[in-house]
Image 1 (cartoon, rainbow, N blue to C red):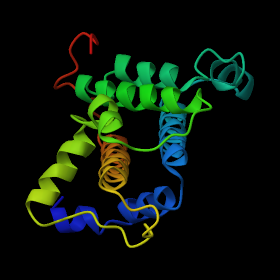
Image 2: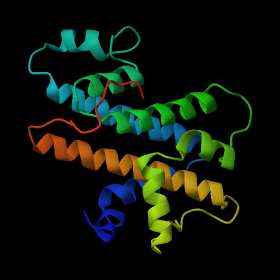
Image 3: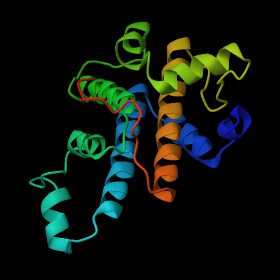
Image 4: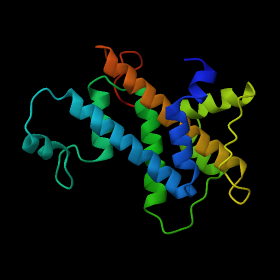
Length: 188
């Protein structure tokens, strides 16, 4: 997919619009909620057998074995759907989610947040590449009050991570292979 097509894709625009109206904390929480929904839908499609009650035992909170976000993430990784790098990126994003979701302190995107949780993810790498090639992510919906460099970089990377994973899962749905490259041992 060309850069122009990717940035102009409907998926990218939806995620950009959804995250753009949220607070910094909301941006992180919604990112993980979207990933959770994507993984849940994808996992359900892959189960060939199972009644509603059996699938409920697997996925329904609070006691479903796979009801947690990381359980679904680990399942897709173990099945070879997600690569080791994708799994690593999702773990970092989930660590950020846990950090801001379980704190009553004010949360704002900063250089430290970016460096600790977002830098090095596929979305952050693509965001940096787009910036270097004049495809600067400058969302019009970020008002002057909220605009700061780290908000733009963090939100941009999260939007791109969501879009990349969505495009990847859509591709996997259409082809009968799994993510072999970089799947490794899961030590990431």
